[in-house]
Length: 284
Image 1 (cartoon, rainbow, N blue to C red):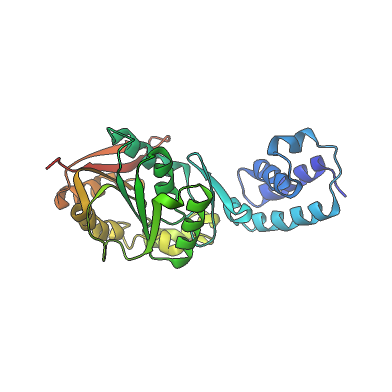
Image 2: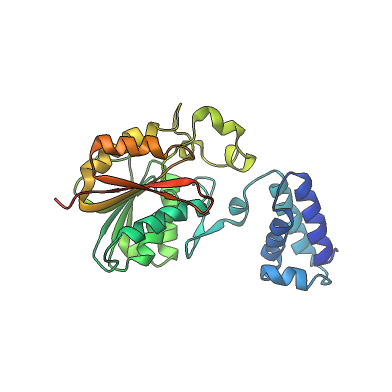
């Protein structure tokens, strides 16, 4: 049986040959998964000989990663905001860029302790809605998704995060059948032009649900359907925030302006890319 150090070096080598930039990091996480060690301890215990069962599991997980399956699918989880969320092939992998939307909403709210009503279109794993609820102790939220499998993941995540009593999830087609008003409306809709999807990294193009990626011919199809519902459902004085793809902020801002929910602003992610368009409804 190999030692942990030998397994780490071989795993990093193989993942590097597979074209993975984070080869050694990923190999270390896989070893932590099969041994039960914290990831930093894998390197510190490099002379430890692996148990046969752990070595076999590591080989199986390593082969999946060599095939470019996302780490979140292999491990079944992904950290987002302050939460540890379950992730499956039925959901979009939560990304750090999407935390820009959470930050933008929180920065726009004058009172985080208010009993706000939240609405999340295309909730997927529930990551945006649950992150916001974790910061807004009196808020309640509704997540909408067209995928029953994704909703099952979101429900499980809400329960695991202790937020199930304040989060509801419903099968739906954007705003169809939804009434009332909401203080906060958020969405990370599909925004990649259909023709570009197959050219994305294999982890995305081959493993993430295409329905959560494709924004039609120009990437804006879902915004055109969604924004009229936002204008109808947003409360006076409410905040709406939409994640956008690179280069799309201007077009999405124009769609919001035409729909008339109020003034808009754009927030950039840590890479300086315009990642979130925020709309503020007038108070009356």
